[in-house]
Image (tube, rainbow, N blue to C red; front, top):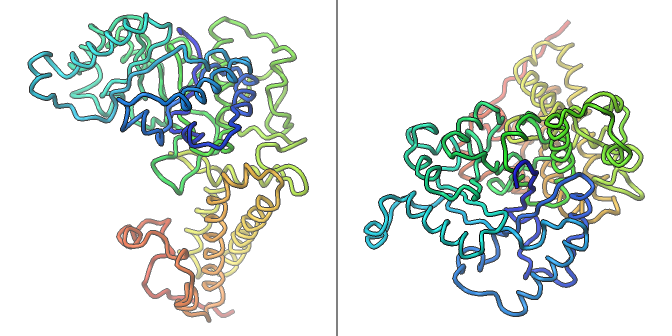
Length: 454
């Protein structure tokens, strides 16, 4: 498994296999993975009770048959690693304490985990891919530090060398991954880690979606890894750009490792999106910070009677970018809103920037309508809650700026006693969080509008 790319669907892009109505097909995912050079699917849905809470219970014959169908279909689609040839034992996010019997049998919590993992690995016949997720799986969870953690030292010394260890980076969700940071954990674990990358995971916040690219990870990291598992958005159709750029990152790192600076062949060029604005030519490396968009046919979002334009795709991605940063469109929107709130006395400039802000709000409303009218219903179902929420927020923001501009509408009219409940975000939690610049619509203070006469 050394120096291979792995792609994980650990938070269940698909629901539990057994909760789906037949026929179930993994065809769309396997085709994309094969096209972009990704080779591994990790099946671990959170809503499969026998995978989690009821893990001691065996699958029924019907469930086994459905799982077998998934494996066979995956192999048919040319992604051999999608067959059950690899296993993982995960000790993340659990209590560190041992019961009395275990504390008498094992010298430490780490020793207990390592012993169990080694026994399972040998019982399975030492499969070529066997993953171990430690309880201290990132730098912030290590005590007192990565290099001095007794837990990680025990794992590194006692875990059988062919068992791979999962690592998420400095944080659970790491903004960046560096060669230096991975070298440190590689030294302690006495093996290159498998990165479990939570950059695009959104299961911790139902109102967030991450459509931005796989970034903040240098291609040179490939030589310091046994693999990389991307933990994606729960919504399958939201992962087009994350998957595409993950594949680009892996191929770039593999080329640099092999010293191959030549032009890519025909098959490689077909993997790249056809976009003159973002694609500068085959001789130049693809910028992983840019967002790939297919201009000829924006299959990512909508196709048919109402396809999204390039500018609409950029707007949508920018507003749902990455966990640590907003995209360009979101940054401009927030900057303009903050400035408009604080500078309504600068009449001429204020009106100019207000017009630009209102224009973006209108573009968001049009974006919502375009997504709704598209014939790609799978995309609509996955993205609609986020686009709908964005549209409502934009409408409230538009009303707020119009109120600041005219100075005749009261604050009560702005939000309104008769407003729908979804206008007031967060309930009690939202009220407690008042004070954040992004929660401007929850302020109850009186706004003072300055009128300047010339």
